[in-house]
Amino acid sequence: MSFSTTDFAEIKWSLLACLLALIGAAALFNYTTAYEQQAQQQLKQAQTRLTEARNQLANAQSDLENMSVYQNEYDALVARKVIGSEQRLDWIEGLERLRVQKLVPEIKYTIAPQKPYTPNPPQNGGNFALNISPMTLQVNLLHEEQLLDFFKTMETQLQGWFLLDRCSLTRNETTASGIAPLSADCSGGWFTMQNRNAP
View: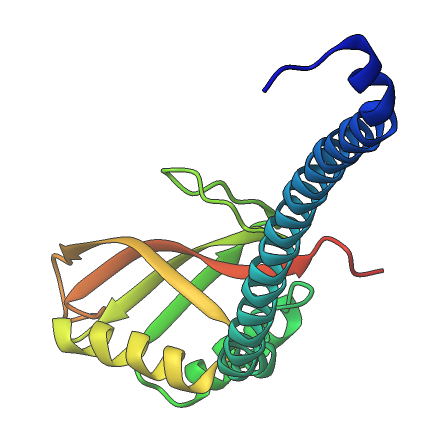
């Protein structure tokens, strides 16, 4: 079978329609491919946002649980007057109460002005600044156990957080004049935590 130019005139409209159909199909294919890629990209973005939202929800739930756990610890520190301003008057009154209880024969102490405390190694305190009020103690003792009992009683009866740094014991020469046989020189400090954002 052969085509001539006269036959071409007969089928030109059909060929044109076929060519237009092919062009339309190619354009439609390209459009649907681009649309599918865009839809897949939007799906990935939506899945990423969903994952981020789930992670944020999990973090928020974890923070809520942690807050309830740490709230009790925070409240305990507030009740012990560790968080807040310096409690110098309370410490002095508490030490005077211990003196009246005669746990040791004699006690002398000095509490130095409060200053910022930098732990070694340095720690990040977040919103809280850690301060220390250094204290030195001179305690006369009948025996070593009195010193341990004194610090245990101080921990249970006085509000605050006292950290003992060091103690040195010396034996006194004479006990005939009423001097206790042992003396302890101790140093440490009262710690307080202040919220940097508090007024």
